[in-house]
Length: 473
Image 1 (cartoon, rainbow, N blue to C red):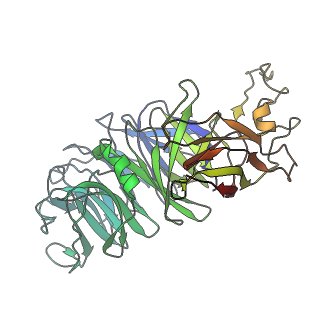
Image 2: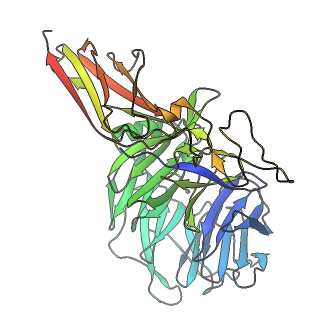
Image 3: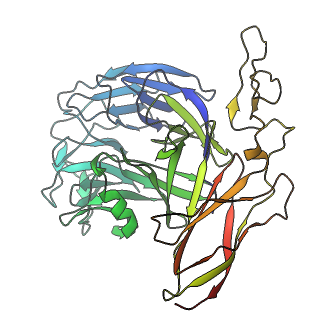
């Protein structure tokens, strides 16, 4: 098991919420409240224009010379000229609003709110919209919810079905349906569809039910959610779900965020496995949904906006904390059961990277940013281990980091109650022969183990081993 990524603050935009982020070939943008900002590599930003709305997600795309922003309202469309930085609202009467927008060369393609209509702009011009250049997704009478483009083909995602169109160059309307392709699983949320790993992913809906997660395997839908994931989704209002995707260290991830849920669902596309991500609130002592609410890869960094404020973070597996907050990582193992007979658990050992504790005498990157005053005098609190100069990043001397621990507890009644926590060291720096091992773990007819780490150190778990004797029922 590899650790989830940590985060550092990249910049703070003056307004919230951040409604969307987008990267062109060379430039990065964010919409916060009613303002479009361009982001720069040093964390600075500049305002490029304003919108008429302040909340709800926006959709963005570009054609190489124009950036387009839409917000789902009838007049909610804006264009930033990427050559001159001129910014203006789309006023062409042929434009009647859009929920999502994508570029299907040489056109912008949109879906009109509350209809089954998809429409295209003039060639390479998002300011001009011929009112006759539209079509209905006629395979089913459901409304279009979102559009996503992959392989220069547009997936028209309706509430119950999906059609695929491409630019055939036909006249008078240049888009044609890919013959023989009709997917009878639609989408439940317009902002929970992602193009990633050379295909698309979405949270599905059809005439029989909802809350199944799909990926397109060519033109065939492939169910990737498990019964547990589908049960989790059914407990929340999924129509407002959002998603983002990214790749790091060869692993592609599809991340689903749901308002009101205590965690975010993450599908590791490379490993074909699910996990949850959450933010540990040290004040409430509870997990909350993950802070990240979008993603762009810009300036060699994975930049993710906070769902609640104007923060944009630099996210990386090289960081071991969440913008100064320790990450509480938890792994729950499957049931151990053998015909409901008693099992006597002699010992359990977790194979993992050990000897990773921090050195008290070193400045460490990753947790607390130290600042200096305008006159250059270092600012420091008694918790810091030494004075610092401008730009230094250090952590307080903390036994939790210098001698990191792994915490074990177990349940013998299906997770309803748990044992006391038992703590084991995973080694101070250089203690590479330490073993994360617990002895005399009692007996049970069926057992669940759970291990937790809370430290600003790398956490890599490889396997678990135990010795068990079978007893009499």
